[in-house]
Length: 149
Image 1 (cartoon, rainbow, N blue to C red):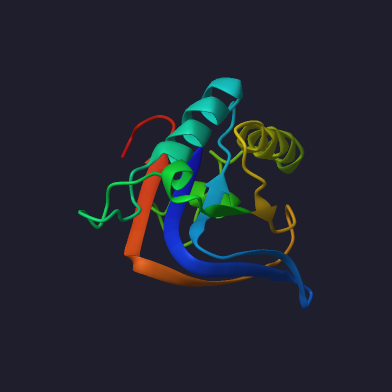
Image 2: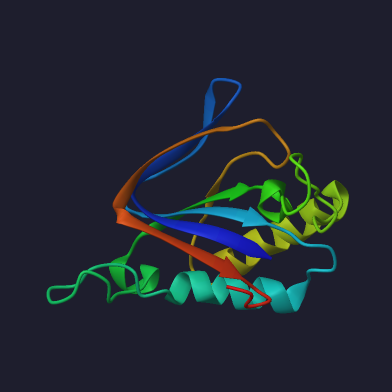
């Protein structure tokens, strides 16, 4: 699994002109599912996101986690995080999970975060979405369950 995590002041996602998820201070997270991802990747990435120390405290600009800061989460499924552009000009998505299986893993990821005391706001899996956010910092972190970066 991969994630692009952005610390935001606010964010929302729209599908066909309707807002499906909205948060104030917190994290906007784009999530990609790789072929074969499962519970191990869900747990690793979910807990890493919740424990990332990227919020300010009284002393340091990056020292508190989402749990500590009391922020919210906006999740957006994004298979294009597994786009491979090393050859040619059109990305290959061979590493991305099939839509049916990816949706199942994504739902379990949402359940994992919910089980940790968060109520993620969301887009709609597989839909064309408009994501609006106000990046705070800016702070943007890339995460990968394979720890490739």
